Picture 1: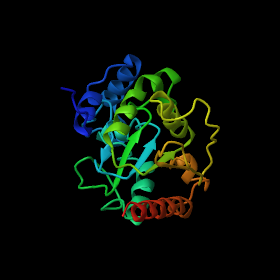
Picture 2: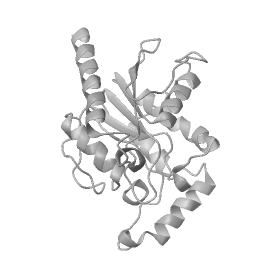
Picture 3: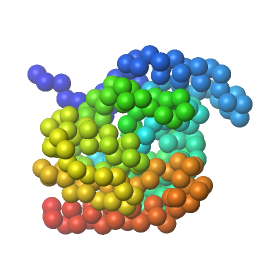
Length: 237
């Protein structure tokens, strides 16, 4: 009998992953040395799994956990400025029950949304290597297969956008050269009844503090996604 892959089984395997020895050493070192502001915290220090609603229609894909964010708290986008921006926006759009997140036990729940990352270990300098992304891609493959109700995917940044397309090509859901280019606010209809693909700048401090990405810009993308999900539901009904 075939084993049915679930979000729980993916999470279990991912947390135990040792595919990238250099990344694992780096994350453990960060967890041991710590940042001064978090010296009393117990760091997670392991690969950080995705989280959210297993029946989600919206999947958000980020880049990677932050060394003193997700690598500290054990939940992607939790405990750093990127997460502060993201969860406030998801709450305004109705995808989260609260506007902030400080730790993985703070009561945050996502509604109709699931968040994952292209890389599940914090990379030095927030710069993942191609080989590391390649080794991590199998987890996104498994998540796409387990999240059976997806109708929309939001790629946060160009790397996440490219990795999602590579993942679709790997499992035979997309032509070898689809000719799609990342653009903030872009929306893309993919062949084969795939979920609608949306793109937004990553909510990093480099983008939000410089004004390259504003709350209004991000809200606009989420509102377009909600409209797409509503239309999809009406067609299904």
